[in-house]
Length: 286
Length: 276
Image 1 (spheres, each protein chain N blue to C red):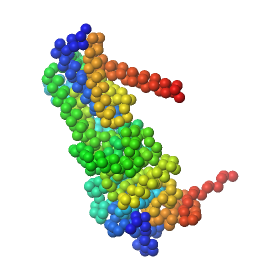
Image 2 (image 1 turned 45 degrees about the vertical axis):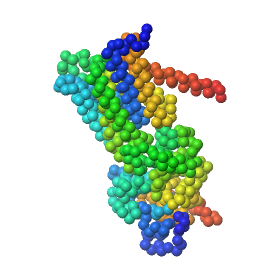
Image 3 (image 1 turned 90 degrees about the vertical axis):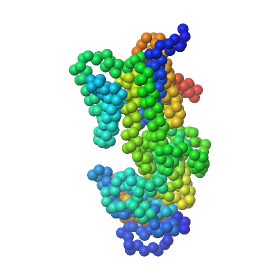
Image 4 (image 1 turned 180 degrees about the vertical axis):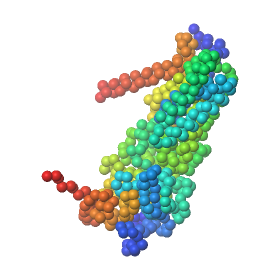
């Protein structure tokens, strides 16, 4: 089954209001990652509350919500960087262990990268081998070939010896996607991969991601631009510390869900099957 | 005047080898120190070692054992305190190292009989390096370089992108702790040569110069120790012929090299601007 297909007419009765029944986008009946009533916190501040989400093999999903709504926290909880304060996280039906993380790639926000760090494109991508290699062992011929293949797939071959700052925004994102791909992941988590990029770079990034997804890798990204999400992604999770809704963007991007997610009034236009979201302008003070 | 005349003296030969070894070692580990923005920790640890050195002297314990144990303790304490987000590494270094330095000063003021040895600890005594010291420095250098080589991937990952490294299963806390231990050992080996007041410069200046010359991490790991060794060697010769303190001359050689590179870059920048 195509990773982007969803079976029509699925029952909705077992799901809370706003949460659309989701069908495994692949033939697998076990989700890659399943969060069951998960809560997570930074110290005494709760960042996620009672969230249940599944990520299926081959799925392509976006996680949207306001700043501080728990999008990055959700990714960090899956990666075990943050402890789960309640609920549980499963990987293929079993408790998520460190070994399972080896099959998850992670692409952080570009804003968190130190662009003055003396490191080349090839050196950054090679870090992806750390997912498999531990203290000993060099980079063998197979690894070198794999590195070359990934750089070729992402059009980075000619840029291998360049400093990471010398690249365009799209190429920079491709470098970190390449690093995530090197560990042969089943799932890649990307934190705001198109934030701050121009339209051309955003187009490049979504092109890479679709290509990777078509090869069977599940992808979950956090994003702010709802119109971009509606145009490119087949599944969306709306989060504001708790799960507000999830489903196909055409179905769940509606004023009531968005207002609840962002605590502000939003308008939704449907035009030729395209969904467009805008903020309702405030009346000027007279 | 032959360049090799000073090598006729054993004190110079020992001092020269020690300066080259320590210069290369500080240049190597200094790459990580600078990139991890820990420059102040080298300075702090060397001051902490002063307390340990004085205590070792008073208690008649071997310098490397006594001051080494003290440095390890100080390093791990700094690491532990700096993990508390509301404190920060700079404040942790300030608290631990100045306390240790103050302890050393307090003991010195009580036992006024060893002023000469304290001067050596503060400003280095490169010409007093014995063959035994040399072997110890060589062993420490090999140990640190081998450990850094084994840890190189994890160290690079945790230095560049600690959160992702942690998500990828790298034990960042273990790596940080091991790095502090290696740093403490390096500072220990360097203190006898450069003195507590000048160790940090040997650890910071070569990687900073190297950073001006390359943007590749692995090249930096080669250029920086080469520069450190060069400054050690050149500093020793200059010190001999100019009759100036060896430790100060080594650091000043590195500083002069930094100024030359900076001037070249400024001139190049102006030339490029004119050409445009």
